[in-house]
Length: 143
Image 1 (spheres, rainbow, N blue to C red):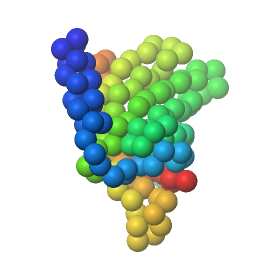
Image 2: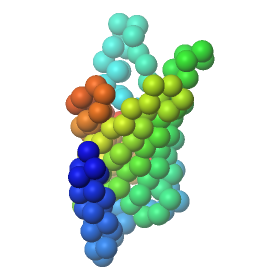
Image 3: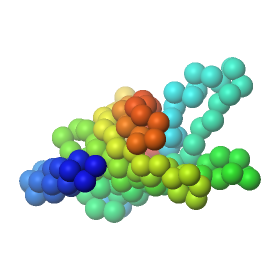
Image 4: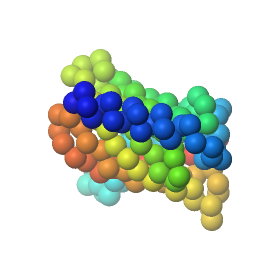
């Protein structure tokens, strides 16, 4: 695990040293859902959409968080995303107030330019150290 983290950190630092245009400008806000795949169950009655809020602290580095769940069992999730050449790499921790778990992942950010440059979709693949691989599709707006 130490070697994996060291390789990820070194690769991230190498990417930040290259000159590039900003994909996600500093100061941008993001409002979205944690997993839009749950919309498939909209008529089945088992829809759980997790609201996420994000902020680009510097160019191409976005910190996101969400508080979700039932009122007697709220879960706090935090993650960091680094955008590079049209894809993003993320590291996060879920349910920090309860049974915390760590995940690493990668995905692609698609701006819905035909509708508006503010709306986006971001399919991703994550590996959670407790539960294994999972796929998600985020859906939201950038301001």
